[in-house]
Image 1 (tube, rainbow, N blue to C red):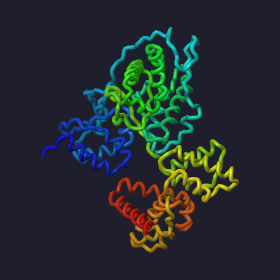
Image 2: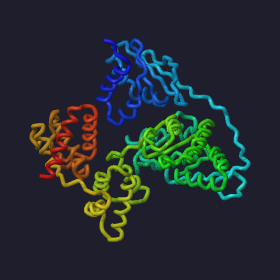
Image 3: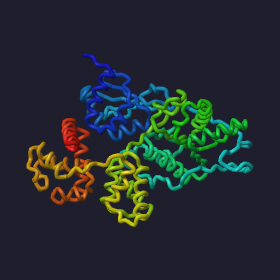
Image 4: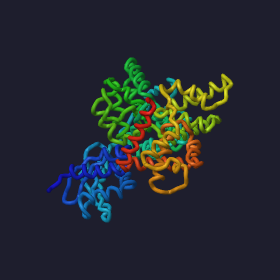
Length: 479
């Protein structure tokens, strides 16, 4: 029975989905498109060269196993990389005969250098009358890569930002679009890129501007019949960073002007960095020609940080501010503030203020009072003992063995799963959780939670078991 390229790749995706976590699958495999199947060679299309290199570095073994499973030992995978101008590159060359992988390199469209008359350009960011064109980058110098905590939730975006800062305009990430929900660090990362370019390339002109300020400047330039001066100024910038690009929606004149600025910068090898609360494909009220250009480079999303990253962010903030609060309090805050880094920092500020004004010691009780202003419902009091009993009953093992030293596989899994549920469903510190399991330490709890998470990402049956147990625990709150 003959199979086409779409069917083969769909089968490959089913295998891949079972072997990577959901976020990695969404980021690295959903954008791939099958192109053709010639004999035993499946060609897939990837968005850019960086995408191809990442797959080769991190997933080559998985891809090799998957292709051979579908096409046999002689199966090969070929890459087709989109060119910089968004058109397909049809030329593929073999680069890895042993592994059976080939790639087609998109060389991009050559651009002719453009000339700009700089003698009469007005700078909307400096005082009129200054003869020398000196752009104030409008950057917050406190927002750097050093103060941006890296985690699984933001690693791709941060790595791309570092690459752009090292070689602005010289990577495949042009434009670099950073997108994600409010409070996840888009603006911080945008400023970090700008500050790093300022540090590494003092002769380059960098400019950070919010989309609101950009729109207001356009309105002012239209009033003063100075649109050409406005456009000419922006075309001189080496690195342009525009924050919250989604607010340009339905502003047709602003989009038209930005389109021409973007084209000139891109053609001259200048770097463009954009932030948005959604990916380019979901930007409503935006001209299709702009959306198309936003897709030329790399779109990197920021996800809500996991518990460990939230704790690291909070501890970093405390260190910078010279603050110190008990570990169980910081962990309690991070258990309950899950989706917004700004809220996380806001809770810390409020906690310090309440402690100072009311002359109260910072403890769990004060933290609970403060955090009620930030979340509608705290995690209810689920005890570790209750979780242990429920899990022990499910696995049919004596509950006391969870605190013992036996290494039988069934008991080890039950013990690790109990720690995982206790961490996610109670406000106990990691140290306190460990105490409930025979005095095990903080690192053992972290290791157990990671082991469970790995199983959740790769074992669908185990995933269903955990979901069932979580439902039982939550239902018990209403009994």
